Image (tube, rainbow, N blue to C red; front, top):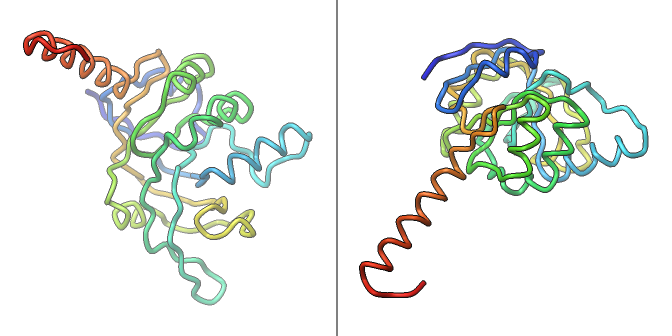
Amino acid sequence: MAVYKFKTPISEEEIRKLKVNDVLYITGTMVTARDQAHRRALEHFKQGKALPISLEGLAVFHCGPVMKKEGEKWIPVAAGPTTSTRMDIFEDEFIKNFKVRVIIGKGGMGRRTTEAMAKYGAVYGAFTGGAAVLAAKAIRSVRTVEWFDLGMPEAMWVLEVEEFGPLAIAIDSHGNNLFMEVQKKVEENKQRIYQKLGLSP
């Protein structure tokens, strides 16, 4: 296990250094995006429209933050990760089209996303669920909020962060996926238990 500290924009060369079980901290620009922001961004791409911000080299956080407004400034209150499997249907195209380098969330992602990360150079960083206040403390400022018509949780928040983490690299850019490996071992152990008990699954 190695510890890395990257600043955005992050290059593909940097991302290829990371292996599963490494720990990553990110400084620089991070963008939140959940289901609706993913859907709208991909619609924009198909229509040839530019996004409000270039996502190339950035980290995308599966998060519906809680923000409060003080004057003209937005202040982060909580920024816990959303379950990433909800975004699995979008993420391979998102990585391919926008060249994002780090996806942050909880719960992992599947084969399609894993293959896209290997092909285009991206990783999945797992952030601890229930640590929303810790995440908010790493946010130094809210640069802007885009697509606020989607609502606070679904809007695209453009954040400046400092040493955001720790992020456990659970999917790397070499085809390794800790979540899929654990699932495979569980299935193997389940089969052995069934056999010992003389049961059929």
